[in-house]
Length: 399
Image 1: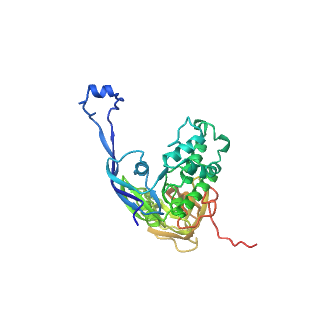
Image 2: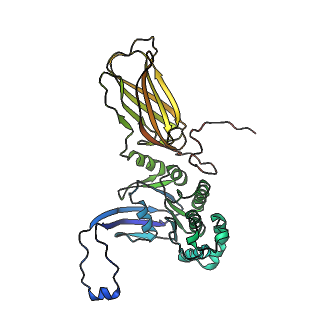
Image 3: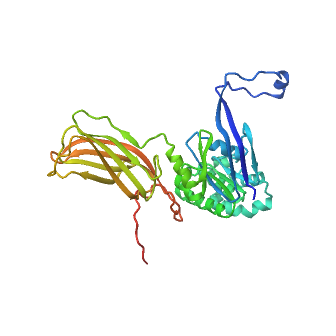
């Protein structure tokens, strides 16, 4: 079986810093055919020798930092912009949803835009008619079908664009990071439809920063870094490589305070490496403490806070006050969470150092931000939605 998509040595360069030329009419071009090119431009390489193949029916995630070249790649695959060099072989119709309003005409009505997009895909009127009701029902814009698109809100445009792209049955469906615009209910519908499209044997290319969605919807993923394919492999392996690539570190260093007990190092070791942690996977936090003198009642505690600065997890280590004092010098401590049940979202660690005899508090600081994603977990029917909880616990249902 031949690949449905072959990307061969694709490079895309942009000139930056050059003075913008005005549009030349035919008369201007004929009058001055030997006009020199604008000098002083620098070249920025958005994609650098990108190669990969996609087989029919595969769902491929594309992940990477902002500026890695993800959107540029999708625009080339969608034939919106040409590559500077290289070749793409596409054996099927491509429908893409790259950003709100792309491929729509603002002066045309919703109805007219549906038929226009179908025609662009090479479909005949009776083929579009076959899916028309499904598109309208999914998008929820029935009352506004004959209203010019420029009167639609961004959410309405997004719903209609997604419905058109998904229901007109292209062989290849390309979705960029657009689901962030929609509400939770619409995101649930979109993810469900994308899963349905994939299971029907059509090919899906999905760009997202939502690693939980990428993990749920795709079996293989591409990790783009600075315009190059750093890894193309099974999605869990690619997500781990992506997370490990962060320059942001999960090691926090504090300067020692002369004459005062202090924590000088905190290291958060996530399940996926870097700053990415899987739900219900192990998390380890290591501490290094410096004691300038023997200390009775050593007390170290840890809290994990969410993005709203709310404490979610609390744990501690105390020396009994009647035990031998902890000796002067360097001491190391580790806490292991064997199955951290934090729900998807962003978190950070707060560290407290004190002693229990005189109730003296030596230190408090925040450090080591990390992200929890629902990796390798089957999503419920409504999908993984943000902010529905902070912590997941097992429960046994009976009826």
